[in-house]
Amino acid sequence: MLGKARRPRGAAPLNCGEPEPVTDKRIVLIIGGGIAAYKCLDLIRRLKERRVRVRAVLTRAGEQFVTPLSVGALTNEPVFTNLFDLDAEREIGHIRLSREADLIVVAPATADLIAKMAGGHADDLASTVLMATDKPVLVAPAMNPRMWLHPATQRNVAQLRADGIRVLEPAVGEMAERGEAGAGRLPEVPELLAAIESMLAAAGASVATTPAGHSARPLAGLHVLITSGPTHEPIDPVRYIANRSSGKQGHAVAAAAVKAGARVTLVSGPVALPDPAGVDVMHVETAAEMLDAVREALPADIGIFAAAVADWRVANAEGEKIKKTASARTPTLSLVENPDILKTIATPKAGRPRLVIGFAAETENVTEYAKKKLKSKGADWIVANDVSPETGVMGGDRNAIHIVSAEGVESWPDMSKTEVAERLVARIAAHVANRRPEAAQ
Ligand SMILES: Cc1cc2nc3c(=O)[nH]c(=O)nc-3n(C[C@H](O)[C@H](O)[C@H](O)COP(=O)(O)O)c2cc1C
Image 1 (cartoon, rainbow, N blue to C red):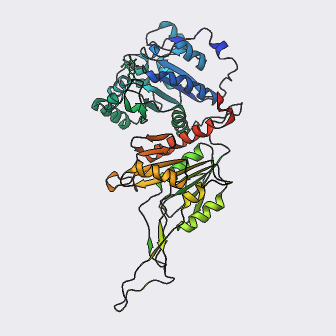
Image 2 (cartoon, rainbow, N blue to C red):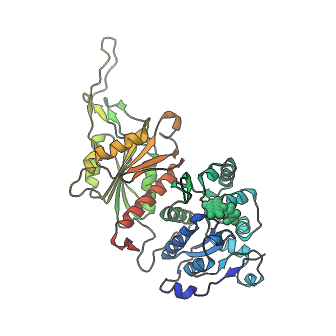
């Protein structure tokens, strides 16, 4: 059983000027039959910039959406389409194809391909490669929201995850079909790149920098300042007022920003988490200390204020432990407002980070409050999440966020805090890239 390899005529001229890969990172990209297949052409270009070698497999339906000629011209490799092709045997069989890669990426993954993978089918080249591989697999679904939410698709996705396959959450938004919106869009290319890079890194195959100096680490050269965790406001030397923030989301953002090449300063309130590797961490307790540390860490290109800073502190905090005695009256705590760190830093002035992102934890009217917060604080984006006890977000490992900006509200489905962090950093990188002069291509 073989993969039919088509080397498109004209591939070399179309590709002229592209550097040949000089690293040994290899991806097999399986392109399924969905509208979003066109995004793969840009994905291939970006991977090639990062000197990742891409071998593409097109399903029969995939060929209806992008041609082997375009794909081959961009990969500068044969394009594989047919399981039964004797000529291709001499080039590369499906077993070699599935093993000679660091990662297999399925994008767009159709409902059909996901079902085949979950069921263990192997009736065409794509599904056979997926069955034959011993390499990590990344699946980026793209389909109509009803197809995505169909119990069969959800069951199949759960099966793939249980089988150790990483399935990205599709993005939320308008569909190609008029009047259709919801979860089902292929994640944008920067998000796909972030997921690919993190999986290659996990497989011990980090992505290289191109000779042209394009960094595979899109935040290289930038200083990202992040706050995380709760603050503790003392009542006396042994007691304090706190909140339930664990710091998991802010710390995950710090780790993702380091991976994206940024210099990261993390100002952390008291948390039970290890310091993320490669991050400069400043440990603080109170809101006032957090503001001092943030000021000390400036200037920064990007400020991400994920900490759950206490709004109030105790005005009359005691220097000695308050004693409970039979004669003493129950103490009364009087509260004063803490400094507003987000507003202080977001206020337009020289040295303001060029992108200021605040977090909003709400238990009701989440996006409405976030829109108000965006204006009142002067932030560029607010990342809002519902922290009602039933969501399990505070202290938990998952999150469902809304990004509120001047452009509107973008709602992401529930996913792990690590995935939220990686996608948020990819989105920041895309935003920064769009504002860099060389972004015109
Ligand atoms: C215009 C058009 C667009 C389609 N878009 C999608 C899509 O985005 N996602 C999907 O799962 N299926 C989509 N389909 C259906 C798939 O193409 C179909 O299920 C096909 O059998 C998938 O084959 P494959 O999984 O081998 O690529 C679309 C079909 C048509 C005609």
